[in-house]
Every structure is written in C-alpha cells, then in structure tokens.
Length: 412
Picture 1: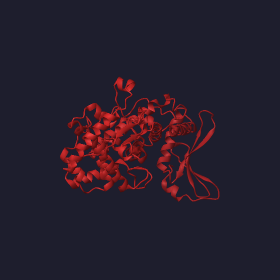
Picture 2: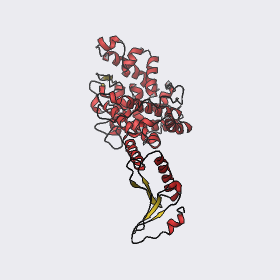
Picture 3: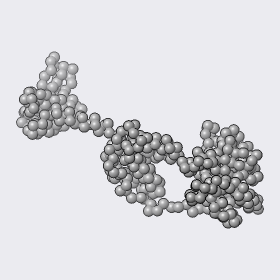
Picture 4: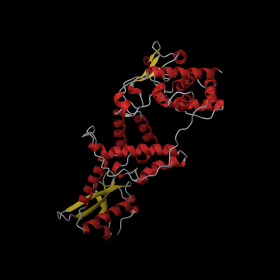
C-alpha cells in the first residue's frame, strides 16, 4: 500500500527508530524513518550499480519536505538507477556544481572591481558608478554570475528606467554597465589586475546587443542672453554662497567642479591669479601643467564676498559638514529653484561655461584665446610639443575686457 499523508501525520515516536515503507513499485525502496525524538525523514534504499551494495540516501525531513516532493525525488533517482547512475554520485555532482557556481564571480563582484579600477585612475565617475549599481542594478542582477548575464537581464535593469520617462538616464546606466562588462572581458589580460581578480569567464559583452533609449543624446545648447545674465546677477530666492558660486562660474568661465572644489591655497590675490592644479583638471590624466586663470578686480571683489559669506579657511564653497568642498548636485537644485522663482528659462550650472564662451566671443575675443582662458586641451602638434608660452598676458588682457563688459552689463 502506498504511503499517505495521514499515515505520516498519525505516526507516533517509539522507543526505537522504525520505518514506514511505501509499497509503490515505481518508487521501490522509498519510505520514512520515525525517530524516538519525533523527527520524520524520507529515505530511499537501493542497490548501488557500481558497488552492488545496499545504500540509503536522505530525501528530506517532513514536513519541510512534503510526501509528494520526496516521492518525486525517489522516482527520479529510480529512473537514474535503471541507467546505471548511483543517486549518491548524482547528489555529489549536484553539490559540486553548486559549489562551483557559488565560487564564480557575480555582477556585484564585477562592479566592485570596476569601481576599484576607476578609483586607481582617479576617475571622478567611480562614486557615480557605485551609486548607479546600488540604485538600479544590484536588485536585478547583482547576485547573478557575471558570465551568465544575458541581454534580457540587462533589459530588466533598463526597462523600468525608460518606462518612467528617464530615457537619457537609462542610457547613462547602460553606458556604465557596458563599460563594467568590457572591463570584465579584458581584466585577466591587465598587468594591474594580474592574479588579483577571479576570472569572470565572459565571452561577450551582454550589453552590446541592447539599443540606446535615445537615438542621439541631446547636446547642450543653452547659453544665457545678456538680459538673462543681468537677471541672474540680481535675482532673489537663492542662498548667498550659491549665488556667489553662480556668479563666479559666469565671471571666470571655468568648469563647475573646478569652481566648487577650489580652495584658498589656489588663489593669489597679490599676483591676481587662480592656479588650478593639473590634478583637478578635467583632462588631469593627460595634463601635466596647472591651468592659470587671471583674476581682475571684479573677480577679487567677488572672492572677498565669498570669503565673508562662507568664512572657511580651506574651501571657497565648503560642504555643510565643513570637511570637504560642496557637491555639484546641491548647486543644480539651487539653480533650478532660482530659475523658477525668477521666471528665467531653466539652465544648468555647466551652461554658465557655454555662456562665457558665447558672450566673450560676442565682444571680440578670438576663439583660441577663449579656449586658453577656459583651460581647454590644445590638441594640435605645435601646442602639445613646441609651444611653451603661458599666454598669461594675453589671457589677462582678454579677461579684463570680459569683466569690464560684465560689470557694465550687470550694473546697468
């Protein structure tokens, strides 16, 4: 007679172990042991095809393992026995496979290595890649073996971002994922990581076959008009430090992070220069020289207001914790609110650099000099290999012309 759930539930413990056997011919040798302590465990007895000895394997403890599931396991093992497969060998192979699977590096390990690689190169994107992974990727495929990630897995990450309308951001996430998997493809061939990373076993980049959400990423075109510059200068609804940071961006034409992360040691009010070290420049991996920004009386007046407003001995624009410079995100949000309260067409902090480039051109400063004033990398052979002139006098004259125009504009 076949073993039933009712028999199992009614089976009481005795002074010694006893067995309930299943008489089903398909699952010959299947049954349950009942221990004196009351535990009930399914088993399968069989003759090993390799040793011809009687063996017994555990199929799970009741009620965690149901009668139905235990009987199905017994049936599968019985089918294997007809083909000469010992259930213990099968269980051992499955266990070894699980151990091997657990040892294979997953996507989280891949991203940790990729972030570490970016940090070694001093890449500012390292923190952003880690943030993106934790926010968008970890919960979907973080624990998946990196070599088993498919295009569908990648799309599972990207689809929710696109479906909520953030298509450009989805493409940014896609770019970080593609770069991380590309790193995993070639890390074993890197002298930096030789012997320090597990082999990810990647044969292809699973992100490569996905399509971008935006065919062509929008290129920034926003530049403030003369009237908008005047509005920004006299607008309300923004904290004084944020307003001064915004004014310095317009007045110097430098990059957002170069302004926000500047420290007083870089500013020489006597010689009227701001020296941005090579390590803080956007092209810092190629740059060997600092970028010298000439300062005019107009800039110095702004800097004195900054010093009075923030009252910090190290940073021009300190973070609230006072231990580091301010982050760009906070200024982005401040300007967004500022535009709304002053009815100015929205713009981002980086648009101030484009505004500088556009308006300095409108007053007759030539493009090469404007590029040098803003610290753009000069890529022609002459500039790279031969021209050692600093162009500081020319930049100073052009900056005086710019701030004279700016002062007359905002004062009118």
